[in-house]
Image 1 (cartoon, protein in one colour):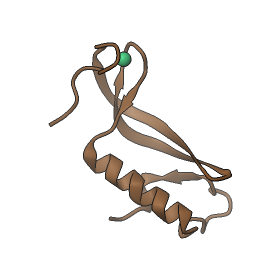
Image 2 (cartoon, rainbow, N blue to C red):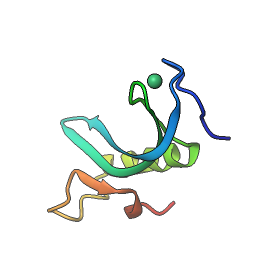
Image 3 (cartoon, protein in one colour):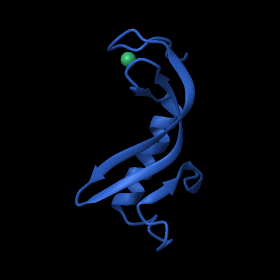
Image 4 (cartoon, rainbow, N blue to C red):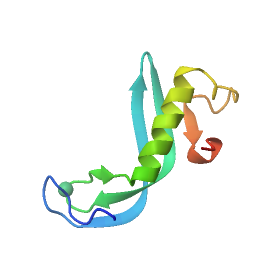
Length: 84
Ligand SMILES: [Zn+2]
């Protein structure tokens, strides 16, 4: 099952990559190249359950500071760094 229409504006969803930015406490976590369906009208991203799950896991690890192993890339992570 994949999303087809935007639930806000009924715009068409196009498969692509987006940047997921979330505030975790005082830190801003930015995850690049997240696969998503993006509304071509309002730009709202829709994530598949697999991706949402992976990002939940990533945020959990971020909370535990388990992912802050690359000083240069701190705060900018790739989905590939998480293996479920
Ligand atoms: Zn929309």
